[in-house]
Amino acid sequence: MVKLYRVCQMCNGDGKVGEGGVQDCPRCGGLGYSLLGKTDYPGHIYPSYKVFECIDAGEYDGLIQKQQEGVRIILSLGMVDLSAETSAKTKLWNWFGEGTATRAALETLIS
Figure 1 (cartoon, rainbow, N blue to C red):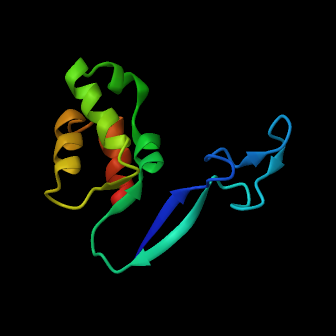
Figure 2: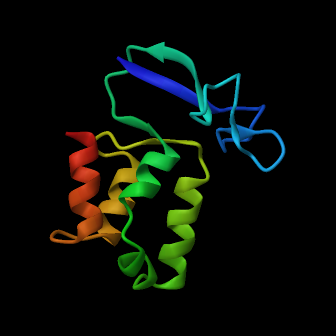
């Protein structure tokens, strides 16, 4: 079962509202996102922020500009399918090779 999420429209993903952003958003409960629905798609689909959290900043900085742009495009999709043989997974696995912190974090995410 894959859960689909969307960024909360009330707090724009911050999870906070009010003057100075001190109150939890009443719409999303302070999460910054809400459940959009569920699907039985057998793949590994994740919100972009989950993939972003796996990327090691130093390893990202070590990529060439074209690869960095590719990572930004993948993250801009909102949802990323890391199922076997998808373009996003193939590219990320090529850019962040075996033994990198990013690859390890991504493999942990999909396991």
